[in-house]
Image 1: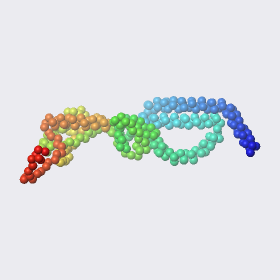
Image 2: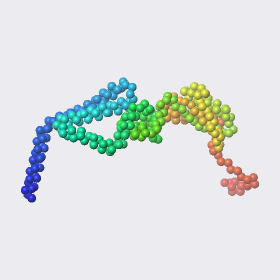
Image 3: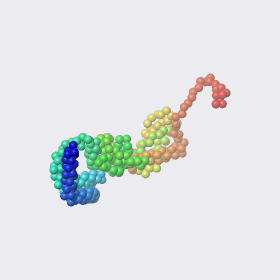
Image 4: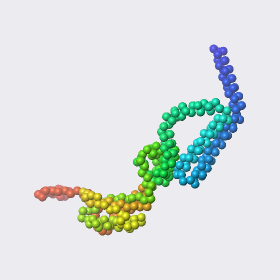
Length: 295
């Protein structure tokens, strides 16, 4: 038993001595490899910035420029890794890596299906013109301004200034409502007036009010006014007009301003905006008791 332990100790000592000798022999290469890899990291950042600067004069979207710069930066780092392996004289390791790249790629692809799908979707979203930086969009029940598109997610800023990160795959596969695709947005406002109102006067008054308070509306013909239904307590109408804005927040502000202006105009002309009321009908011979009258 003692002899076996001695042999095992000697083998371990010889192996450690061999490793130490190899480390000392390869120490210059290791130092050079570390130095080269650090340079590659700085070089990748510099090339990424240089790529953005060169692409700034192109007609590509800002998101596409960022994606191209990141991909070039990643390629530079991979090239640096292969260079480091060559400096360390790990050609056999390099060949093993290349030989196993197919199998490893398949395994990684299966394990990272979601991440790869988001990466591919990010490249597609960066290329298409239907969505770009500064657009006001609605997607997956979230609405806001697009402030970033990277290889993982689309970042939008909501009206309350909160940031929402939508995975690229979900944005690409689901409908996108882009409020910024046109130069104008339509404001739609619904309201109701009493049955005793002069409907033609109400229509003209609403149109005049919109024209006088909103600059983009040139004349009354630009205001669409439609009576929609006979409601339970009012005759309801809908009015529509355009404003020079592509932001949903600006549309909401314009709608609020229109409500204030129309309410002032109605009050000034004694036009009633009814609200639901309940009417109680009693039999003709019905009499209240003294307690009911006092109550």
